[in-house]
Image 1 (tube, rainbow, N blue to C red):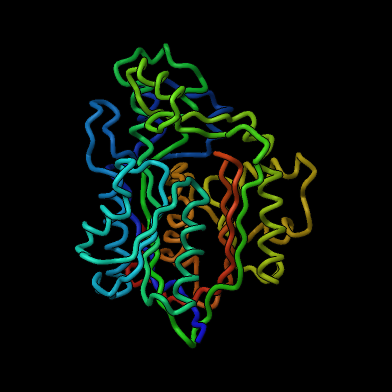
Image 2 (cartoon, rainbow, N blue to C red; image 1 turned 180 degrees about the horizontal axis):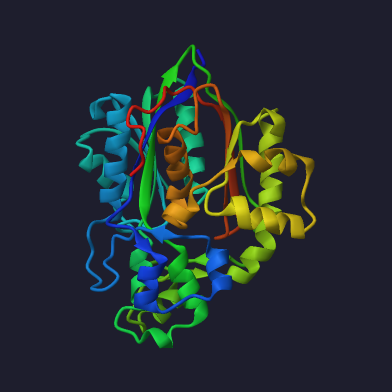
Length: 366
């Protein structure tokens, strides 16, 4: 018997105290008003101390803390979890998979695990995989986690350096990203609304990556080059091409998700477009002459919390969802769309689902 999968709770974790733009300016130097407006970030959280370079915790620590909070809010014992799916682009190690480290920190001796190595799209893909397992009746309770530790890739760019030596594009990168984790608890049911439809694709098969973390892999050329540098891993972002091509990816994503979900923009109550897409990218869509009637309908329904957390890769979608649920903006009965795009190789992933979780008892956020 085909079951339905539903999200019953979410949880989140942000490391340390928030770093404001003013704090970063005192450490890195200022970002021009034009670039600061493009970034759209007011604060971010790092697990790396920006002054000393000391690590507070690890990516798997953050992921486990977010998962534990989600389980507590769902009133579910960790031992009831039989599927754990995690997405990250910044794992603790290449091996073992970070999801297995999170399993250990949750105290689970045995559990089905799966890790998606991706950025912004990864958690939506992970959520889609988890719900399919639950709908088929193979597993009963799942946790889906998106977690990123990006500050370790940023800190070497400025630690011990004269702020005046930093290029504007380096500052733009550092101001844009943060760390964090968020989790979703899913259960299989036979009488609750659940997932309506989904879509995912890579549409950059003939394009250069818009984002890359070149160190730490097995590519011989990159490994040779990285060994000559003090920093073995870093984050490189092509902001110029991202601005040009991302609106096209986002538009293709919206059309595909609505079609595969057999639904319309009018039926959507909240559309989660994390990482600033709600402002900057909608403007780019209009400038690219891609503004469709669907985007007009969704205009006031788009939700994100970029200014509070910054760009957080895999954590972006679940952090926005967690924020909406805990602050009462997301209500039982709402039909929502999770729509994520990723410039690494120009991916998108989207899901439409009917939200049925009860209001969050915590009624607050971080």
